[in-house]
Image (tube, rainbow, N blue to C red; front, side):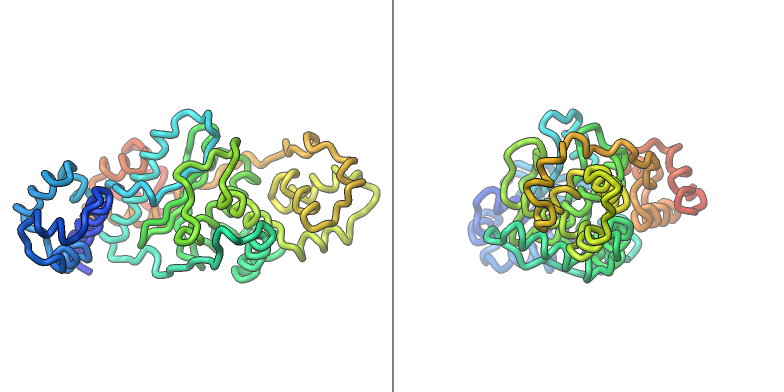
Amino acid sequence: MNQKDIFNLQIGRRLKIARERAGMSQSELAEKLHLGKHQIISNIENGIRAVSSDEMFRLIEIFGEPMEFFTDPYRIVDEKVLSFRARSDAEGLSSFEDQVSKLASAAIRFSDLCGEEINPFDRQLKVDHGTTLASASYIGTQVANRLELGAVPAERLQDAIERKLGIMVLNVDAPLGISGSACHMPPLDMITINRKEPDFRRNFDLAHELFHVLTWSALPPQRHDWSDQSRPKEEKLADAFAAGLLLPDSAVRARWETRKTKETLADWILRNAKEMKVSGQAFYYRLVNLRLLGKTMQEEIDLNNLSRSDDAKEQPRLFCESFVKRMHKVVGQGKVSTRKAASLAGLEVDELPPLFASYGLAPAF
């Protein structure tokens, strides 16, 4: 697909968003544009027919949107494609949302300029609001097995998501209280994770957001998942899925069967949680849900004593390899200016060379 076709398809998609947002049919819009048949609007929305300059100015008048709404490739106009996971008192959420929007649009634009497909797959799990938490957990374990994540799924999860599912995972610097986000905007599926958080939290958030990406069609998440308030069914299902994925039934049972009685139960849970790269509470509740911990054992444990304080301090590299390599390529070829690339990434220009170097890439400018 050449750049002209990509541009026409972008305008078409955004026209459809504007039209549906205004509650207008294709026939009504065709009449306002003096085009006669609604099929012409359909062709525009599908990128088959280009919009003339006169038609563009008329669309700006009809929908009250600036020209950038239709033409800026680095702007996301559909709010339904993003979902954010944060505490309700987190500061800086608005600016973080803007940052993620820029990263998502940049990922699509860089891919287009490189002539590469972002994600050729369209995978969606068979779930709905009738799915039980136990079923979601079972599906999580099935996904772990299908992705061949091994005995400690957290170790291979990000690589498998990127390489086997074609979903981009970006490690970002987010404000305190913001865990990350999910984006489902065909052709882009993207997850962002706050790399400043402890490893067990990053792992759980990654598995949680993976559920949203893989179930967006049937269970579209709300724009904000306030992790400290009463949560909708899809968020509880995402938690159950994450538990099943990171702590597969067979792996947990195998550890339980070899448990030594020399350790206190709390110490044993904490040690195994650390080895599985999850929180102590997550491991505890998985044991409860698998009915391995009876009520008597549960009463022995103070959940406040299951907090991990020995978390690894090393942060993963900023963004991910595919995103940085594409940015390096388009900057090196002069298709995107260094200032524009840095702005989209939320960086200063002098921060680009160290970023490229972290992925073994020479300076692009």
